[in-house]
Image (cartoon, rainbow, N blue to C red; front, side, top):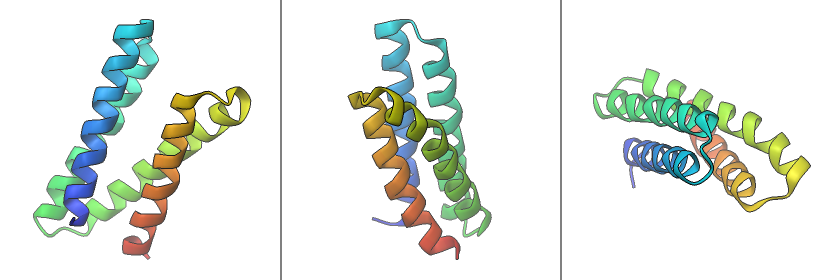
Length: 101
């Protein structure tokens, strides 16, 4: 998969995850965060598709935000959803860092 496709997959996963969090637990934070990060990754994907290096920046910093927000929640709760988000954050940060650096 190309970097823009990876960013688009992350966009989809985060947006759907935020929507599911809202529907199951009425969590507005999940909805807002999932939608915002999903939009960030969708925009990053579009920029990468157009050949702009700014897309990598958006994806990398979005990955850092995902990792920074989910890591502490996983550390405290040890629950599956923060764990999955943390793993996604670690993998995507590593992946986009390699492209960014």
